[in-house]
Amino acid sequence: MEAEHRLPSIGSLHIHTLPESHQRYLCYTHPGTRSFNLCVTNVVDVWSTGFSAQKLEEHKSAHGVKTAEEYHSRTRVAFQKAAVSLTVLDNITLLKFSQDDLGLTFDLYKLPIPEAKTEIQSVMFHLVDQIHHLENQLKAAEESNALNLEKTMQRTQRMFLADYDSKRKGNGPESSLVAKKRPAGESLINPGSKRTMAPTGVSFEDNTLESDE
Image (cartoon, rainbow, N blue to C red; front, top):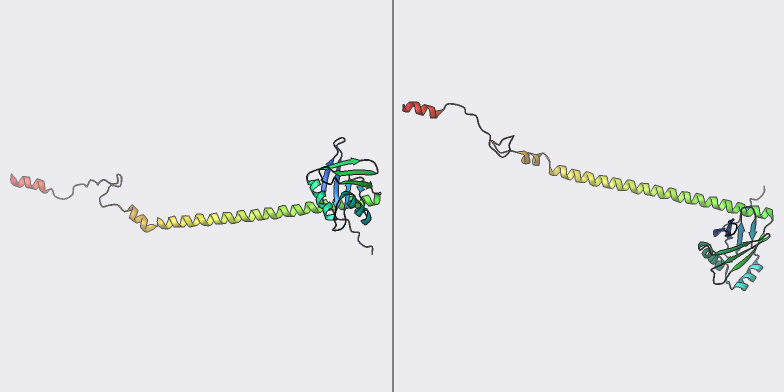
């Protein structure tokens, strides 16, 4: 069984547009604790520094770089600031970090087609992995926001019900009867005034007059 071919990993990424032709190029690195390689592609051709251990040491000595990690950190900064100058010829591409203190410059050479295909595959799958990672992060954030919203609604509902229950108990049947109890004889139509009672029974006043006569 043929062993699975492992694609090279991808580090920092930067899309550079040439000001004259407006052609776009993807610049990227291959991470490593003791190694460093820089590549440029237009998704058709690929140029690479192709540093061997010896060539990397020579480049470090020429530019005053001490470690491979320093290459990676300076590349990240240059890519983030878009401080990159790119000159594309045919078989060679010149890349320079325009705002770097050391003035780092790299010569990149066009790769043969088989190697270029491998590089483009590694970039493509790296970008797909990054998209899936971002989608998972977005999904997790949406689920977290939905859960927080649900908890907030439940808490608000409990507070509302507690407040409503408190008011209901404060205005219960007993307090309602006390509040609505009217004094005897009070008018239903005009609260606060006495009702006029219709005369009933014998008029003693009339009998008194008749007896006097």
